[in-house]
Length: 282
Ligand code: 13P
Image (cartoon, rainbow, N blue to C red; front, side, top):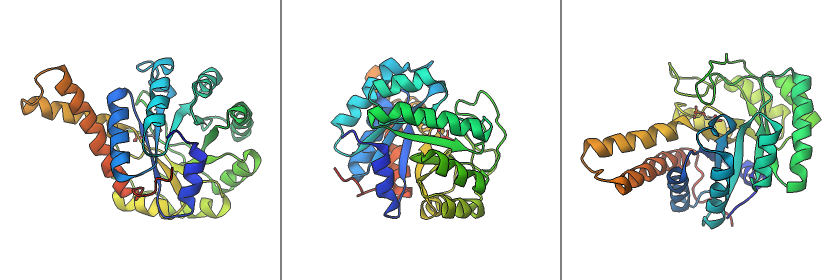
């Protein structure tokens, strides 16, 4: 069932869990993630970032994501991750995505606020939700640049949320995209402060490599959407590699099955850690 991300996150705010937002690049990953969500009776979010559209064009992958969400037995929101340009955001809305992110985290605060308001106006006629980001999550979504991490200033988050009334706000609390070089330890002191100042559901990017106990602490402290990308891609690639090593992949359709299994296992693991199971309300 295709649902609005705002509803999923508001529902999560009334209980003690977070919703996993899984980045996908092809049909096999979509199928693996949805299979794990259906098995756990968990709501989920399917997402793709603008920088990944050179591999999976939005006009092709977008309708597939929306169709898969509509067919699913659990609530699935379809989300544009790290929207950078207005034409891409517009296309996602036209294709039926139920939420879009505008990533203005690299902009001065005033510009980030102004652009986020513009995207909120674009999304309104579609009834779609909008996520924004403040502070700088380290690394980058496709590993192409190494953006320095800068923790979100709680007072800026408060001003941003008040002025934009955005549906979900991504924060930087020591998290980074990609595989971490050292075990990350999140700044829960900053998260606690932001949570007291901002009522919108908070979002954690850079989920790959965060310790399970830190994920749990996150959803106890206002994080209601957790993005997982690299772990999905790594799990799919590992599943295929192991399949070849074991001699289990003998042709194309064995490869296809191994990809689905990798995405399924990764989503299943994170759905368990985020305690999302059993929260599907259709
Ligand atoms: P990871 O690649 O670190 O899981 O980050 C995912 C993410 O935040 C996508 O926006």
